[in-house]
Image 1 (cartoon, rainbow, N blue to C red):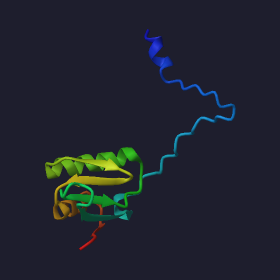
Image 2 (image 1 turned 180 degrees about the vertical axis):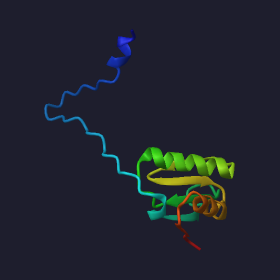
Image 3 (image 1 turned 90 degrees about the vertical axis):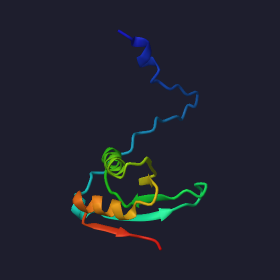
Image 4 (image 1 turned 180 degrees about the horizontal axis):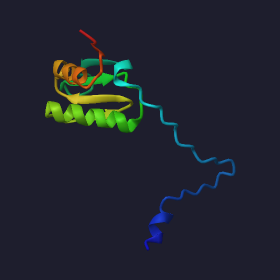
Length: 113
């Protein structure tokens, strides 16, 4: 049908030693009760705006994005997932702790000052 779109996925190299990168192996997601998550506040390099950061998640990127979506929805704010951390706009540490406890994450700690 649309064979030309399949050709866009190819990458050509003139390097004779070129080896295509293999995709990273997915880490199996641990049970929520066995995860140790940390929640802290940060405003460096953000123009003075405050964000809540959740780190320490062990699992696949899809599960991390699903957890971030849950947190963003329940807090009613925006956010993103970068470098294995969930970034939620605003100071929602206490609300995030409650949401994570309700979701089965028992070992969640508030970090920082």
